[in-house]
Length: 355
Ligand SMILES: *Cc1c(COP(=O)(O)O)cnc(C)c1O
Image (tube, rainbow, N blue to C red):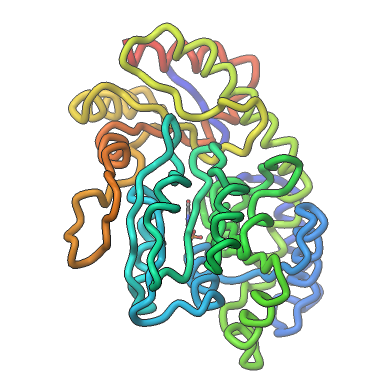
């Protein structure tokens, strides 16, 4: 089996010419870069967001969101026990205390019931990530946070271009973030976007970022190579979603002990698709066998369910996070971009791996 997959980051002529143009104009070396302004405007148009700032990484964007929320020593931030590990790091770096809650039923994303139960007088913010193309219960989380005066940080790092009830992921929480890192759906090596979705958040973000040069800014060259990717983001997301739907329909209904987590919806933005296998040993076997076949398959995030209670408050059961921490397998979006005519081959390869 030899599955030749598209290269990522993409090698498109438009990317080369965008970079060359940025160099030729001298914009690559300026503070007040027109390229950054244009790409920022393009992201605002694409998402319908009111306030958009580009920054140096998704991780920085999460940290900036926490700072805009006023998180400091002694404050608590609720987050899922299984998520991008840098988010808990960001809470801790600001002196905050993570409060871990479980994942929602049949989902890799944070459980809104758990968030409600985890409240305390010290909670300042909640971080909720949309993971593996599955949207978190973000509208309900927003209303929970609004009722309690908490700031909701919507981590849309994996799902640039996904919509939820017609709204772009990242524009629903008080703060939203995208990653533009080297493997993400929009890649420039290192970069991020922060959406300040209300005036208060925007006002609190400005003094953190503007000093008066942009303390967390993105390079004009990085902004330049994103422009052609934004032009094709919707088309690429559709292509990835179609592969995800085919895998869902062709592979997973036929296998016992394997649960498919991504693609309950037909249209999403898939950075990775996720499923669970029967045990952690089975996961090791599957990942090794996939590597031998050239399939970009890996383990999902590590669970923090067993982290010391000195480090995190853990007010609810974290059983689902613990289970997914052992059994989650994720398939990279390069596989989802496979030529549509070869989707059957991809499905057959994954089926043979899991049987
Ligand atoms: C990638 C990612 C981040 C961090 O983004 P970087 O640009 O790599 O710093 C944060 N959260 C989630 C869910 C991610 O997938």
